[in-house]
Image 1: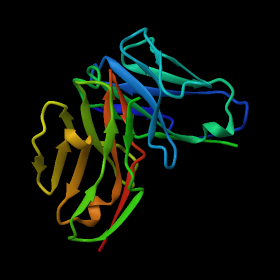
Image 2: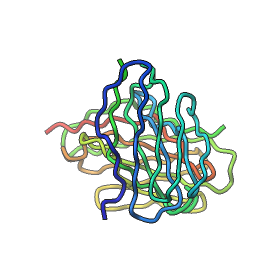
Image 3: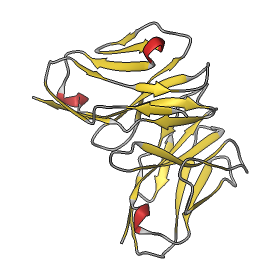
Image 4: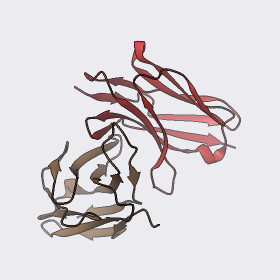
Length: 114
Length: 112
């Protein structure tokens, strides 16, 4: 099993450009999450999904959109990138919610917006 | 509001020293879970432990031990006889419904 994979691993964008980050999991997990990690701020939840076709906002959703068309994939989109979105992005998945299960993380995507 | 505080931003120890990483949390929930994750220099996040709010027994796993005290809302993590491979960022997290709230992280540097 590959677990949780993220594509791409690195990306540099110019302000205003758009891109999509792909997260894939092969563990048949229901829940998927997108976080961003910034120095001194830990991980902050951007959006999450509790099942195929569902999405919900997390702590810092502005400037991002997500889609969960297939159970194994969770896409994070930046429509018009801003320097404030320079960060490391992590995807995670779990069989259920945090009251029952730990989350499994992908390797991260380092995004720089110039 | 749900909150996790890791007051120690960075800790530096010499190999074989014991080190404790502090985690203090705030929650309105009566049932909740606490977690610790490790992020080594390679960048991935590794799950270490999950503990529910009804189980205040300390847990030991090899050189790692966790002390959960509901009275002080703390879930501290101790590494005994630290090793260079323990150098990493350590995150404490709290369940918030189906989600996790992370602390700011503590960077541990273990010097040979």
